[in-house]
Picture 1 (cartoon, rainbow, N blue to C red):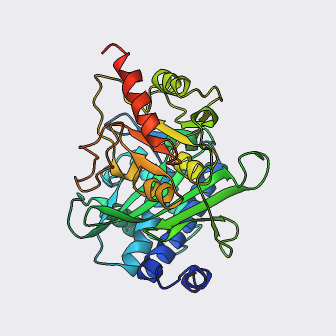
Picture 2 (picture 1 turned 135 degrees about the vertical axis):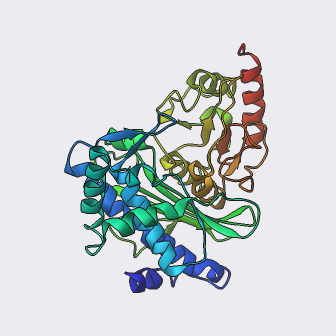
Length: 352
């Protein structure tokens, strides 16, 4: 509950960090509650996906998590707008499919909030329709980042960030299926990561929020020791170009492939030292802000660095997309410039 999350953050909240204490506690509580619902959906039965207009999948888990997080935020910060990935348009339809999905969402949500009603769920999901921008503060939510990983019973993240005047000031990632130790895949799973501007990055097990621990990005100082984190889906990144980049850096270590911003979390705690999201030359795609906001600040506060493929900071002030940026490069910051140069050479060698 509220008191628990406020209490667990007391040791964390030094005077320097106190500015965002309520926001951090609320965000941590919201993603933990949402994770209860998404894990119920993931484990209960075969998860069915609905295709959106852009052909990407959405599930009962996405809508359930968006409802829970939006509801928590609106309780504590009723004047804050929210940029969330999912629209309520499908849920308002009177088709048999939409009715069945609404029933399943309500069943999942009531595992966390027994008194939830269908009308409240649909209306609250719809509160995530803000357009973003460069002024004021707003929350950025991806209720299930990595829906394809979620469908495969693999990695996914509930990603929540807060943007103020175009700058990400805090981020929280719940990764319900991520091992506490990547070297022990059969060990305990479920991690939460949080960070705030100039406050450092921390993690705690989803099963026990009482002991947040600081995290630091990889200490690897030589490019030959670099370990790449990249998407499972080749549609999200050009694996061949990423491979060329790593070869140019002198690293022969196999890549770690996982879905979602769990990659950001893994980079922040030192499981790898490079993250590449490589667009293919000639193909223009505007990244969505909810796919990166929370993860970027977690990496940066852990000592890493995130830019686009040209080395420019990601600009979250341009609405719901990163329209001024192309691709994403993350690192432990030790050899970021070398990665950017390798990316430039590798892309130049690929015919459009």
